[in-house]
Length: 237
Image (cartoon, rainbow, N blue to C red; front, side):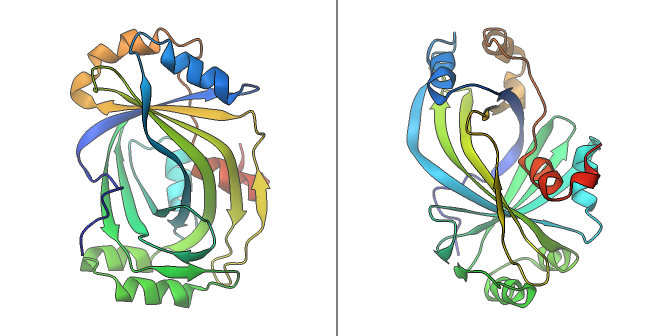
């Protein structure tokens, strides 16, 4: 079973730099990219991205990311299109971070139907029906679903094709209870937009000309951390 063409398998490390625009507009974000020295232009069609994150019962991944552990792992299932109902071509992604750089391993999963009441037993059925390495299966057994998030994404690429920006907006989060997977939703303000600059480690020196032209500083923003803290405000410190 091959990975769908819409997914990128990252075998080499790359940087992912985030810039948070608050009280802003999508048109302003697009203007920043189009007038940037990198001459960014749209690639691909915009689409809705959906993720279900998995973590240990004591939220190991959350704490590793929250406190900036240099080597950390994030596990999620990603698909495009409608959030609920029949999910086609979902992909299990394991993101590995080494400081500011990271890699990503992707494994295609069998399709499933996501509805209220989707349980851990249902997830186990999906994993058993999918062609996954044994070490990945073992890792999944130690983790439970903790959060679903969904957002719109647009894609831009520099004229020299070395740098790519994604623009994320209309972000919402669904609380996933690990045993019953019942969902309830909360959203970020519509004027919160995340620009994420992605590029290979070898191009790190050349990226300064692009970041210096942005009227917003490099920041930290993890959709997973934000979503977990929205439903668990006692964790925010």
